[in-house]
Length: 506
Image 1 (cartoon, rainbow, N blue to C red):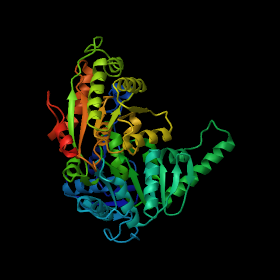
Image 2: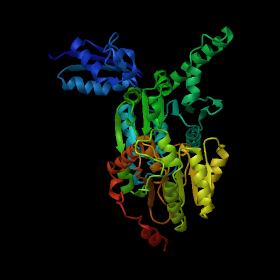
Image 3: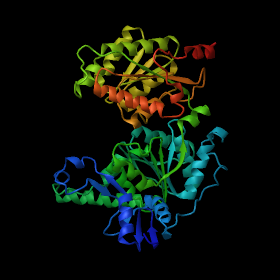
Image 4: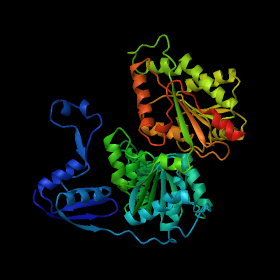
């Protein structure tokens, strides 16, 4: 391949490659390609007319999302080409220099130096993914970035609870925001917090099935929403790995003046869908900083976790080949052996004054554990998705105050819930998704202000069924492959170090 002189022109959303040969264009198209989820089930794929892949590179217009500019520049330069960049410049920050202001009043402790460094790198790169493990203070990073850049800002999330928590943080920092979501539409100049679902609904195109009046009203809402999104110059995406969904990505494409883009997530590029992972980079760019669980554990920001994987034995009616979802019902939800093991460990923890969070996926499972723990004398509360926010808050406050020993919760506890520092987390619901598993573990790693700064994580090696066993091995692999976790994965027959709990309490 002979060297070429190329030009990359980019704005906040899109970029264009100019002067490239067909060979180079094919190279970039392949670089930005991904396997389409479900392609193998299409007639075109089965007939051999399609390889099942698509690309973020538009061959007809030579355009691609601006988030790939840095990566493409590296690849083309590495191939010996000369590149001239013509990138629309971001406006200058209007706030004080990084490290000279403390909007939340927390001070600048050395162990949190990565928070300031994240903002410095954002100013340098303009767009980036900040991979900060759960518990690393992503909301504080968002406030620091907003107050430093001091440009019209949109904090974007998919969770109402996260949106309201962030609104409270901005208010505390002297930047009371507008709120766009969860039944509230109160746009204001400067900073706004918004929900993906609410904003995307206003971006929807009119339906041909609607009346002319309804179509006109929706078109007007859409035009207004597009204008509002063009107002923001900084967009911060919390739990930004969820941009894999089309709604999140659609919103980001309309943020035409958001030259500053910061994605905050502890689990980027971990989704099984290749297109979903690439959408994150397309909208926000590459990873600009990584703050691992181990770094936070070593600094005492997170508790040191101890992992125990119990082998409960297979229920009598469960077979190795039992299919899904029957195996889940028999092997997890209804398994007496497994549920008794949960009750046993939670009861032990309660006796040592450890508050516990027990995480399930099915309401029936939560009801069963709630009953069994009550029979064992453990004070528990069960909160599920249908429960009002006030009931969830009340249960968590009771756990924090020591009025109950454990909260049993569904997947609503994974993110967006202010869980008090707990000493034990029970992964009662199984599962295999890496993002969700890391989030559930993270629920127990908040720093303990009193006693030993450790947390016990209880999980299960469900080896009586091939599907459940594969899921268990996937969860175990996440622990083994994560520095800061792997060091304290207990072996068969090993118990939690309760002596550390007792020594710290003495």
